[in-house]
Length: 187
Image (cartoon, rainbow, N blue to C red; front, side, top):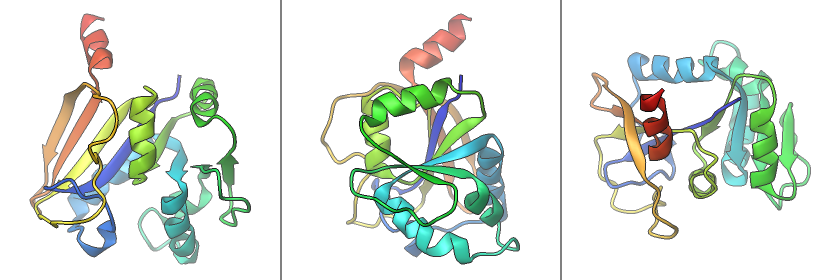
């Protein structure tokens, strides 16, 4: 069964908005992201993230890291308002997103990667569809902006599955639903 794995850039105070303005990347961190992409054959996005990506990635050539993967991989967009996606290999998920993703997870293939899309990530957690949440925590306090967890919603128990510090001060924290981690330990 396929897994849905999300990763987001996040500040120390939980902001995920506009990472292009504050992310401090390095080769080591980007190599970790490339490994995540290599384990995936689909990209799942919310509408706002899709629109940002669709406005920039198609213009990037093969010389840009991950451009070929982003442009050639099948993209699924969870949206009730996006009608005519123009970025190649894009499917808009219509109707019940949780039901559609449950079916998609049962299909043959590699993992489904979620990049950004904080609102979508919150709904995936709520619907128990997210298998892994990877946060690239950056050593910066932004003070304002959309936060990953905005105080709305139910409590979701997560357990740390992996952590990795990078030389630029960023720490990758990988979480899984607590019941999934307990099940893996029992096996």
